[in-house]
Length: 212
Length: 212
DNA sequence: TAGATTGTTAATCGATTAACAATC
DNA sequence: TAGATTGTTAATCGATTAACAATC
Image (tube, rainbow over all chains, first blue to last red; front, side):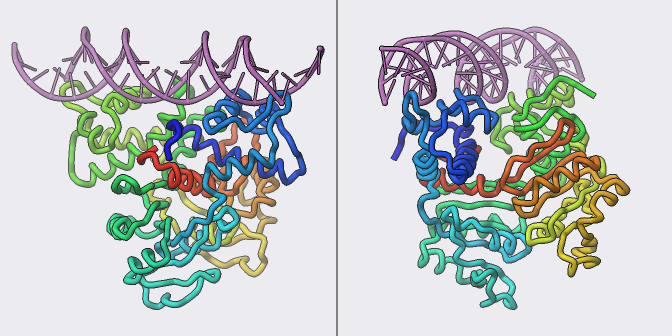
């Protein structure tokens, strides 16, 4: 499955390209040059061309890029052309918020929410059933769940992550404020909100202009 | 206010140093060398020393770093030694989740939540009052709010951001999936959950080992 | 064909790592 | 004093930008 190793910096920019191209597509524009896209996105045209050429030549000299085609290709690279089955662990405020978020248009389908509180058993959140933690392993195996969203208390995350890994989860989207240790082959993506807020705070006191 | 310009990469690592040092401090350890911290955090000792020396010499040759002192100093650099007043715009699921999150221990105090729905007026979320959007400007000015958390629909974010900027907000913590345009002097930090999920998806299909 | 714009190589810039003299 | 470990300079590595030949 391996093409040339792509740098983290490039991967991080892909969703942003995808978003802009989606908007441009919706506005009815058919083709775009790296120069035009560059001025819309505030990145260099050179970087756009370099980034895209990591994955192949999607453009055409003298013409530019076909917006629809490029959008679809980046979608494929990101894997959002496929369905990804997802469960949320923790039916707290955050779990609820994520269950109500519309990730489905990008292919991420939330199948169930897990919690320990018996009074939630069988209830629905936006049509998604809340199940009990003792059903976790059997459910993940049976439904071939790919992604688990971890929105449970820090103290319980490591143990739950272990259980998920043991029943073959592919990826953990971790909202707890700690670094998970997982075996090779399991992907972890962290959303450390506190870190984000601290960076904001840093920038308030050492003002240095915007944009990462 | 300007010391030497610090790179984004360094700033991004600071909250993680802060978190590890906090845990080490709690475990009762008094001093630590860059080498020890390096093996705990999976970064090079060289990077730790370089990063810290952007802000001054916090260590001592032959000894290492005093954990408590270093922890406090990084806290000061990040600005989490001070109180930051915060409002949340949008009392939806996400707004609720964030209002319930314990940011206060790091100095971020949520003062109010704003929404347009009249039926929410005067209600409380974890003791925080829900106010109506027509009171936004006067409240921000009167209470000298520093940070606004934007958890409202994409279509309304730009307009609200403008209003906040006009009444002197210092920073926007933006959860909407778009790039805000703000004047110089206002800080924007984005939390693009969809982008994070797409990176996860990319990494599932092009498995490449972990850690950013 | 002439003009435009890509794909790609080369140059530059910045960030990370290594090395080591300074010093506790 | 000898050993440890920092602070800092130098070397390396990687990412971004510039330049341009290829080509539609």
